[in-house]
Length: 489
Image (cartoon, rainbow, N blue to C red):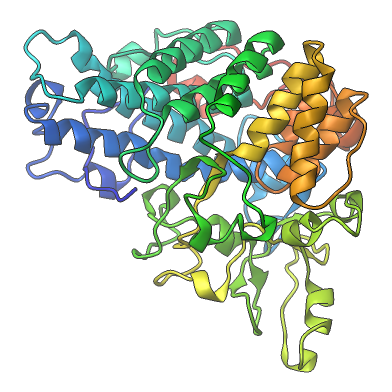
């Protein structure tokens, strides 16, 4: 979704001000706030675009969701290049991490923008217009999304609802429990789902199906399996979604908005950017960062060799499973299969090399945006797709005792890629299918943690510590030191 709204610097969040000039520059400075901004329907719509805009920072969470697991390594130019990702890869991360602070800051910036809109629910002098309730519903969906990203990463975090806060007030807000955060998320998603329409009025906006699918995921993360199974049943029973026939088409820019799309983060390749402010970008930085370093050849573009799939992931696939080669690019095998392999070259980064690249989110020659093209990929991030819903529904139903439905949903996912049925006799079977279907989409670490399998599959994982990431120490300091750190850090 194209950014058309300049958020004012009146939006102070609990960790300080998001200092990106592109978002904050207004003329005259500091002239607009909630009291004199929301005067027209267009103002509400523009503010809503501003709330969606922080979704574009999802790439950090996506990276961590695989790099922290057994799916990928950090990669890059060197072990000192984006050091925080290498620490997460090695399970040596602590409270000083640019990447973890980015997740904390970006998601609080997003939910604060949603709160900025939702303040108007309690304003007796606010204007009325057709569809205003829908604006509020979308804002609640977004606030729930941002809080979910925070709680699954850090556990309990401070809850701020329907208001802006100042720097002084921030030091008095305590960390809520994870249970309290989940309660807030559930409340927002239930309210959103009751108002949102099945179809989005504009590509990339939230729908009732997206709200219900996210709610089911939230239930699943809490072990509320019967509730999750019921809400996933509504999504599946709606008939709004279906698996597309060709798995290899799923991650192309040309196939966005297909029948499998439940919710995407929208990106544009029409505006360049710089490495100075990733959250200021319109493009998806993931494909460029995941790309092949100094590559010169067909199909792909050169990139920065981050987020590299492991041999373990490649070997997890049956060679007959088409998802393997869609997910993992065997670079040397690919080059050897070309008409003139000797003409194709690439470089290896000192941050690690596995011989494999993330083929779902990688720079392709037909999908390169404007300079700097490393940062401006138009490829959307598939936040929730229907196959994910089916496998979450399989998990919820299996754990709730409905093994027949669990088998049906797993079979449907496997049949799409021509793979035979496997007997769903344990949670391990479903978790393995999630890995095969969803690898390199940012889910694996969180799946292993919530299924209790992380210490088995992740080298260096310490039970009782690494289920959560540490609250960035600088945020604890900015809050006056009144937030406790997560155990073990």
